[in-house]
Length: 467
Image (cartoon, rainbow, N blue to C red):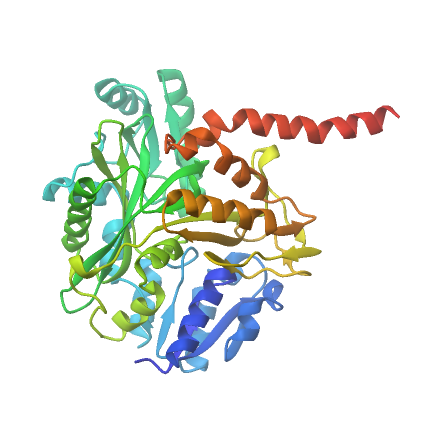
């Protein structure tokens, strides 16, 4: 086992990793930007090193500074968390060359699944279903028009090196396709340094289902069942649940077997996630693989009892999986997670950074909160807007919803805007209660509520102005 681990991240995931390390008797080193000097992860780690100024490019994406911090503090290993450098194959290679164990998959696995087109081709070769589309980058608009005509509209443009909704555009006709192509290429180049995009058939009204994979270096591989990540805004997850209310045991086994097959195809080791789209006929298609721990890993931990972060650390140290047989992994009850973001749902989820003056965290049976925020904490504009994750675990889905509703009523974060109000509305919605939701749920179902909230916010301002 490692004696000291550097946590190359910030916020709630840095805290999550530090807590796991403390329970395992492993010392930790936090890295932080100048703007994060008062963040909890800095004070809870055994050591802390400032690695640069506030912008991510000068701190959390600053590879030389992070490696220097690791060498100065003489760590055995480095945990990248999620985001930032977690899926950067070059960073993983540098860690290994400096004799620092990267707690994640091999650089080769990261690279093979990081290129979305290459990943699609790998899946096609081994028989994992993929969405119809191009196997190579689109060269120009004429080729894009020809492909779209062949696979039929609607289609979706995607960044080959991307994720998180960036470089992604849905097109229902030729005019939209031509205008969106250059925009998507530019956005992909800005976000990932790679302007390559490809086109897929757009699956209408799908559900987003992902399987959590764990694999060790001894050939053992299992999945920890699925999470339903269908509730999204701008192609980014907002609410997740485990297991999926849309997946029965027969489909679960079929999708789970495919997820294992996909991971084995790239000799995957450590924690990863195979993502699928599930259509309304029960057919599913490979979407992508995330070669890191996911934001929503906590709900899988609640229903299986497996500590995924500790498993990551044990796997990286050369140990075997704690549970090596698929049929020995329990699935108990139902868990739901709400991402609590500093965003204004009434203003198209615009970021809402600022100082938190009042903060009351919920508790009680069945409630878990992973957060780095507190009263007096300032949500910074430089990083992701997530303040924390509120999770509820019940004996069944209805109980989990009831616990979550109670917990949301207790959760107070003021005066900044957050996603708490829209989560309350989602949980009240009859379509959600009946599991009749798709990836466009926020736009199609919650749009009227968001418009109403925006109008209510504007009206007092207009009245005050007239006075």
